[in-house]
Image (cartoon, rainbow, N blue to C red; front, side):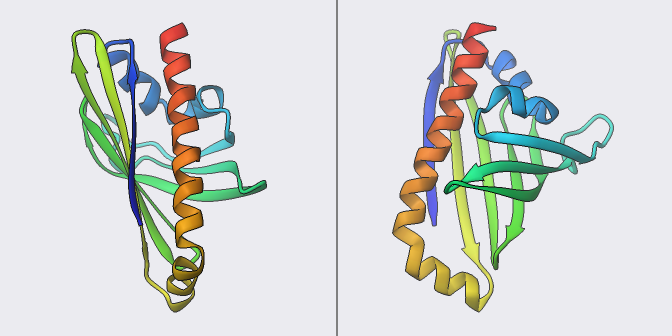
Length: 149
């Protein structure tokens, strides 16, 4: 499954970048996140940053270990998680035009086990629609926080 959700934020990309890379502050930034536990914080780079994120998904609390695999300052970064027989990647991209930042979140999942592949077939369409709503809510939370602070 692959999907992209985007939003315009009325702020320079430096301000958006600062908000979205302060992973330890995500609880204050995104309403769906319940807890962040930092596991590894490398010096002078985002690559290798690793944390446990707890959020409500489908009405239940779920915790995933996530890490940043690629980052280009003020441009984009890629997170990865592995769970329930699948690999999940999310790319957060910023593009600025006249003090407005276009913020896109690209999400993909790849089933790597038989269980993951079966779940993908059975729940694929429902999951895609739900993920799109969840990501859009996260983007709205970030937009509101960045524009109001």
